[in-house]
Image (cartoon, rainbow, N blue to C red; front, side):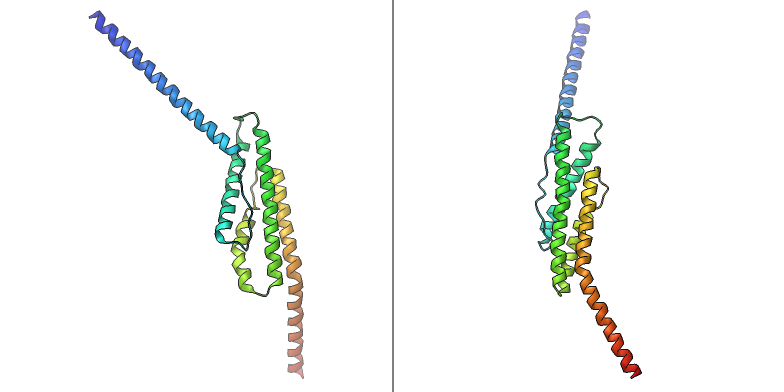
Length: 191
């Protein structure tokens, strides 16, 4: 009976060793996955360029890239312990890219607003409006970084300035035309 007990104990030892090996392998796979994810977060995102006059797909791709970039910045910045030594430098690159995005949006909006101001074609202006609104939404926070927040605010202010610089002359013309019309009506009524 002693031999059977020994072989049972040996079998249990082998089973326990196999379980430990499987658990260690599982742990290595999970660590490898977390390293892959951390590495992916540090890779720069190619957001490309965007034009409000471009097709809907171009704006979709640009917005999706910026959303991905923002998510990467949030994940890397919120980690309590860096996975890699050079994470701070990689995070700076991601933030610089996000500040460039703000400038790209500002430039695209600038072109669209100036074209809209020089055109009397309201249909073209209305066609651009939803695309422009989607881009402007990317300038709203919350941002995990003060430099990105400032770049977004600067871009938004520049767009507003362009809008009013292009809109005010037309507003002035509309007001003057309205005043002339009401003055003419008063003269006719009182005439």
